[in-house]
Image (cartoon, rainbow, N blue to C red):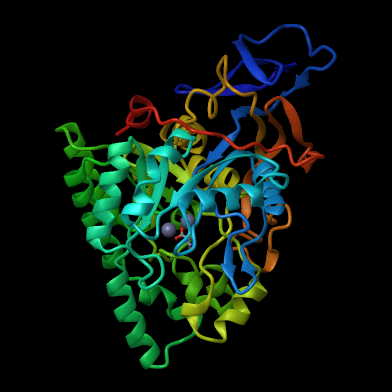
Length: 467
Ligand code: URP
Ligand code: ZN
Ligand code: ZN
């Protein structure tokens, strides 16, 4: 198959090129042919030809207990494909007392046979006990090199600084990468208790219980601990300008021999702000996530960081709950509402509309942070995220001129979406996963759950390229 007549994105901008695919692998990128497409070829005239996106942070079908779960693997992966993302990395979350390997097996059983795109798994560590930490080398050898630790969520997921240090020592010794949720769980819990005591239980109070300084302090702590442990660290879902300042200092330190310090920002923290909490109870619920949406200004600072290479990854933290699920939980006060927003379907089009079209992100950097950098940081950089010979033929055709009103993709919950009814520019028209067409003319055509589990191996050189 030859994808003909489109433009690929280069550091100099979009240029005409043909993409040659054989047996699900890209074999060549060639100058455009003069003759038209032959049988089996694809006419990509008027479209950009992009690598399939890699979203390094999702929570599909995440069980929360009480029968609650975020929207499932099939629906969420359908939204991913329709939005131009062909690979996601989700999180296996162990219960307290559960071995990490058992949680991984549980998550694989949830995903396999349901998921339509390729996927990998991070492993969440909620008990940094010697027994759990001893599992890390074997898991890493089985293709699970990335771990997440929480400084937030006191009494549930939070690790003390001493436990976080022990986790960093174990991850560093094994050659892994630690992802940290940087919010000070003690501070958040204290503010939350004051709010509840004052009767402030409605969803709009959620951001007050997650102050900016809580994130910045926790990020500084995590970066200091990582320096001491010589542990590569990724601060996930950065939401505050002060967190970026802390990350910049750690990156300068990396130049002087410190460990790699990486950053991730999510679509909702870039393109939405805390006005959503004041609009209505339902709008507040749709926006209820942690860290929360911040006052206008933080998103612009983070976008500048993404643009200049100080932040590596553009992700989503896609964790979508039906609005009714959030409404029911809200009756018992905002702390009981499951946290998370959608975004996996919106990542490409929204960032095109609000960053590329506005001249705040170059098309090249947009493509890098959407596909290549997440693949490189997460140990998929020799296979995913680029249009280059030897890479999987994960290919997206994108019409950069299409203008329309956004409606959530797949089975996304329209009422609960942050992005519903926004004017957007750019449309995903066609997608291939390993050479198989999965989206045609903007509609899902994947018949079977054809996604596969991706074992990953970190490549320190590729990982640290931008930092
Ligand atoms: O609100 C969020 N972010 N939910 C997902 C869990 C997490 O902390 O990433
Ligand atoms: Zn988190
Ligand atoms: Zn998350």
